[in-house]
Amino acid sequence: MAPQGTNRLNATRLLGERIFESEPMCFQILESELDAFLAEESRYCSFKTPSNPNRTRESRKKDGAR
Image 1 (cartoon, helix red, strand yellow):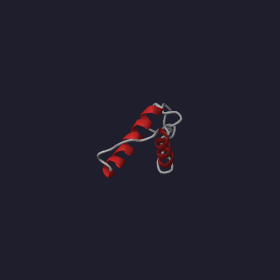
Image 2 (cartoon, helix red, strand yellow):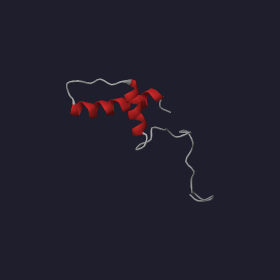
Image 3 (tube, one colour):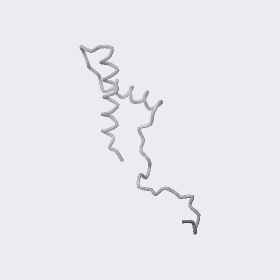
Image 4 (cartoon, one colour):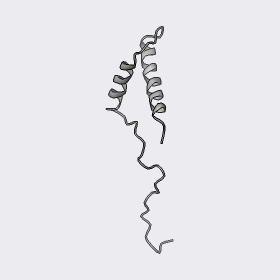
């Protein structure tokens, strides 16, 4: 499971790229603006990781099959 900071860092990078395209000379952001951006992004993508990444995949293989 990825630490929450990694997700926040990636979201900050994406937000920075968007802002830099419109205002390349200045990049300032308040934490509240970052939180608002993360809330908006969560509507379109998921930062959540699987509940159990080590779970084995269920197989459809029948008993006795090769």
